[in-house]
Amino acid sequence: MSANKHCTPTEWIDPDDAPELSDAFFDQADEYVGGKLVRRGRPKAEAPKLALTVRYDADVIEAFKATGKGWQTHMNAALKDWLKTHSPA
Image (cartoon, rainbow, N blue to C red; front, side, top):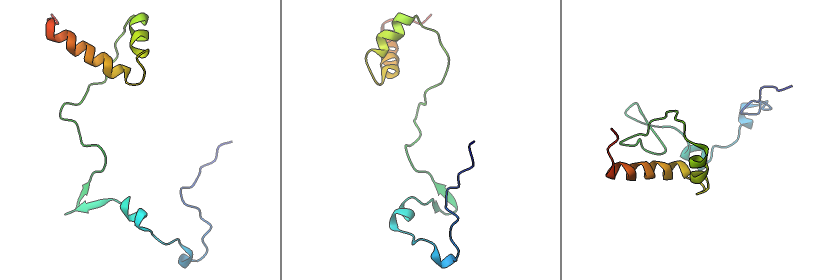
């Protein structure tokens, strides 16, 4: 049976028994500038990609998957290259 796991152990009896807060703790803490949360991580893309569902022939997918990690990016690049010389209409 799965039980809820607590993020922080609750074995402390005395509040003075709490661990010391290290520099690493504060490096990961949220930072606010003038009441606004400063976002961490990758900045938002100028042209974000769209998620959608499409169907391709199995041999096409297997050919791109055979290229290894990043095969969807390779497929996107191939479609962009095709659009340079063809009209989608």
